[in-house]
Amino acid sequence: MPDFLPTNAASSGVKLDRKMLKSIAARSDSPGLIYIAQWLAFLAATSALVWVALGTFWMWPAMLLHGIFLTVPAYSFSHETAHGTAFRSRWLNEAVLWVTSLLYMEEPLHRRYTHTNHHTHTWWVGKDSQMPFDTPMGFGGWLAEVSGFALLRFHMQVFLHLAAGRCTDTMKRVTPEGEFAKMTRNARIMLAIYALIAAAPAFGIWWPVWFLVIPRVLGAPVMLLFTLIQHVELQENSPSILDSTRSFRSNWLAGFLYMNMNNHVEHHLYPQVPFHGLPRLAEAVQDQLPEPDPGFFRTNLEVMSVVLRRSLGRPAKAATIRQAPHMVTEGGPVERVAQRTM
Image 1 (tube, rainbow, N blue to C red):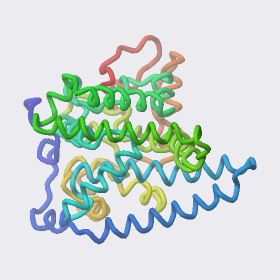
Image 2: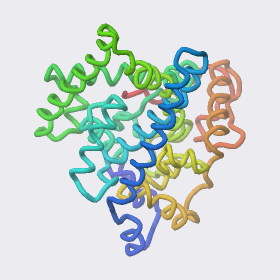
Image 3: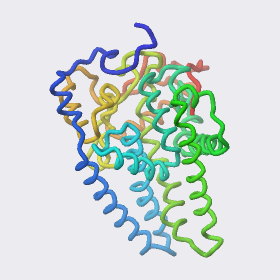
Image 4: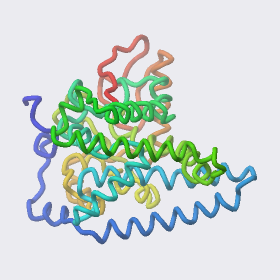
């Protein structure tokens, strides 16, 4: 199959009745507005915990919990609105994209267009602009990814390029030319907001530190553990989403935080389906897909075990999660297949 075909349901050999797909992919404002209300309620509760615990040891676990509820949904919602599927109303979708991208710390149009490219060329070496780590992954790469600092460095580089009116080759390749002026404006406004937050303690204003900055740092590893398992240990350069992408089982809390993106194979097959339609989509195509991998904790523990054993030169076969054949290394030096693009 030619490698320039978009990676989606057609390239993966997955079929779904058009009427059913149209029903599942129907957009509405209500689910997104309900999600915002629930998210704000969780944030109010976790903010109250931080406030009560300030000045004690318990402020740290409170800020971690608050950070998880701040950071993971910010990523998930910015992702959903980048697709334009969170709401039926375009203005509402774009407003939430801007705010959640500010929290996620990526310029929103850069988020949209690099992610569109990621769907078009999912896990294709040299084409996918959202490959956040080298493959096969070693333990050093795992630490760099999960800490959040590698991603933050990349996003700050993007901000500085855009704020200066400069575009990288990747930006030029994936972004419509008419969008660059908007991206520069967004980057400058967002950097100004971050600068104000950074300067606030100098004026005796500390609440952004306790409710935004430290929780954002503490919550980032949990967010990145969700995103890491989307494609890690799977096949590069395949037209089939079934080879390159992972779904995993989830409970209600992980499903809420991640906006049902645990159904990640399904999302890549039909990216036009909104977050609230993904469980129904998963049920409709389940007989055509691999079994989802274990839940969030078990899948991440196994990934960590695999990459650690690979770095130590030991066999790196996973016990329960899916792996591409070339990821099952037997020890010794490992040849790099792909280099990170973000």
